Length: 107
Image (cartoon, rainbow, N blue to C red):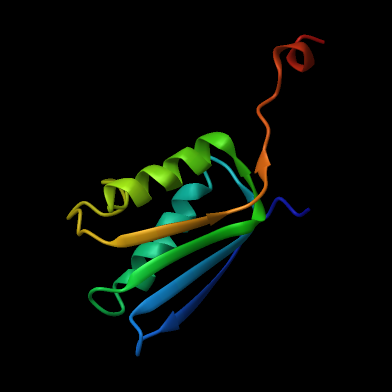
C-alpha cells in the first residue's frame, strides 16, 4: 500500500451529502489533511452530511480515534474549524495500522 494520502470528494448537493474518500496511510499527522478537505466540502452547502470513508486506507489507531471523536462531538477539531460549526460526520473504517509492540521497538 502506498503511504501517500489520496483523497477524493464526491458531493451530492441535491441530497445534501458529501463523501470524502481517503486511501493511503492515515496517521495522527495526515488526518489533519483529511479534516481540511472535509471542512472545504462542508462549506459548499450548509447542512451537508459528511461521510469520511477510510475503509480503503491503512489507519493508525490514534487517527481513527480522532475521526471517531469528531463524529461523536459533531465538530471538526477547533484548529481546523475555529467557528466549531456543528456537522454530521460518519466514519466508515476498515483496516487500521497496529501499534508497534514493545518487543519490536527494543532491537
